[in-house]
Picture 1 (cartoon, one colour):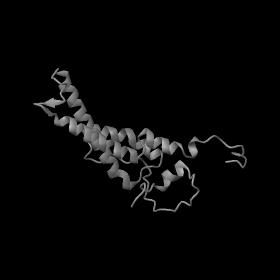
Picture 2 (cartoon, one colour):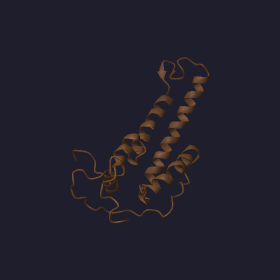
Picture 3 (tube, helix red, strand yellow):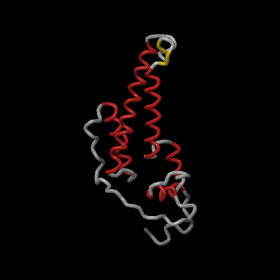
Picture 4 (cartoon, rainbow, N blue to C red):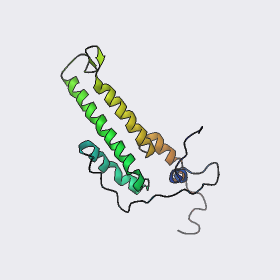
Length: 156
């Protein structure tokens, strides 16, 4: 299907509806009453990242029970990226030339691992609004508009 991928209704509402096209209702998966616990297979950095982001996603109502696997994939990619970046930094600390990026005239596999994990992280992160661009699209909606002269007139 050509064109941009469809957006979830919640994000479309948050971003506003400048085209004034009717927003079709879509099935709404169950939202957990409390932020969900991290899956048992997430450990170390992945679990830390889960704990860092899950509360805010829950508060913004961007997390449903169907999103738990995607969030876990993001956290796993984050952990893989962080471990690869730390390993590269450790190699750089050994003063190896050229700073651990090459091994016997070939690229260090850690460079590729870190790059792929970072790309995966950004892909998943943009789906949840973690990136500045994704947030700016949300902020362009009704939250970022100045109050109108009739706001608050009817109370509430």
